[in-house]
Image: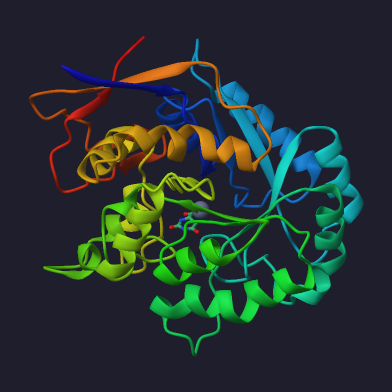
Length: 347
Ligand code: DOR
Ligand code: ZN
């Protein structure tokens, strides 16, 4: 039996939601992951340190018995965010990052930022105190094609921002293009990128060929194959600037399978199996630990986890449930469209 033991992984970009969905999904993350950066795009969003404190308590209350898990809280940046509140959140140890959603870019982002000038005082404070900015890197200008939104964001928003504030630490979330990978590689400091599991596996054909497949629709939308290959090369390279952020984003099926379906792919349940498959295909199983367990903590200034997990390769395909049932309805689990043979062994 082939096995691999790595430090317990962390998820540096995760949507846990609230209420019944939170209760239904959190165990899929806490079973394998020790920590996760928790996205703040609830309705209403997590805007203040007090909001984050209350949300953290709801997350801890939803945690299954016996699971140990540390939610790393973020604040949703708005044009009225207070720099003092952000600083207090960081100093108290509660807040690990602030999230920039360009207004209208994705799920629950209408309260996001329209004019970067308005948030400069907050960003300057973050640069001064060393608090990272997590960025949803897509422009929302209607004239820009949805497949070009990341590349245009880098050129017209991210690069000017980084020149203006070189001391600001920026995490470019869910990179989906070769442009993004190249941009991160070219930076000399203060820039890193998370990569999702699903963007290592699907290209845009998965969404559109043979019919519309809403469970492969997310934002940023999957791109052409050559972009996927660039993501795979970066993720499996061991380069410390790239690490796992699953962007696992549960929506109940009814909200995805309809005339205007939500963006988001639910991968928490089988992410580690999918990643082991990808890294094995790339002859890089020895670098899975860097991607999933070492590079992220190092970027966020935290120690890697002391505990380990062991993955084993089974002869027969491993069966995963097609859906995670929650009290709000079923949530379809990401189907990589190939059999999975890797499984995380129970301790
Ligand atoms: O696909 C996505 N789903 N992308 C995002 O940026 C947000 C997320 C969500 O919250 O559903
Ligand atoms: Zn996300």
